Image (spheres, rainbow, N blue to C red):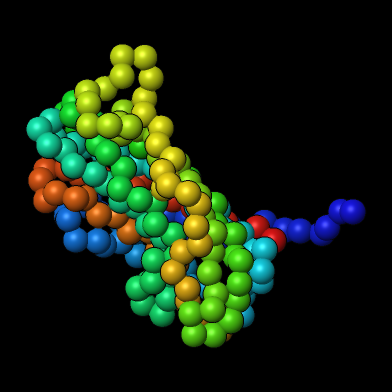
Length: 189
């Protein structure tokens, strides 16, 4: 049985985000790419597809990890999807490309902390590594995000307006850097 469905582009980045270098989580999107999700917009089964890409740099000695997460809420304060700590390569890189994709499926809606998403994603870049080693000589690293059993994210209130945003955190406050050059978020229903 077929089902009528639609796809809607909710937001795109028309300019680059600010280069991010901190071990304190913060948005990596340009302000205009953050999108308000209206109260009551979500239904069980609604999906968000998120794609972001840009440039990343990492240090050679103890590069640490990068975590990307999707946040929503009245102030983008609730982590609805956490991509997990992704290991960076022990080969130094300057402004190499990266690509991140995430698919979030609404599993529940409601007030308080009732609503939630199941999310899974992947991150690809020469700066990524499955373990803290130098680059592969044959391919760029692609890491599943998170590299753990799939689980729903933190519950949130889908009966209020929410801002959707993409955050980053480096585990070490070094000279690692990530910058968004392109970003899109789509609603699939």
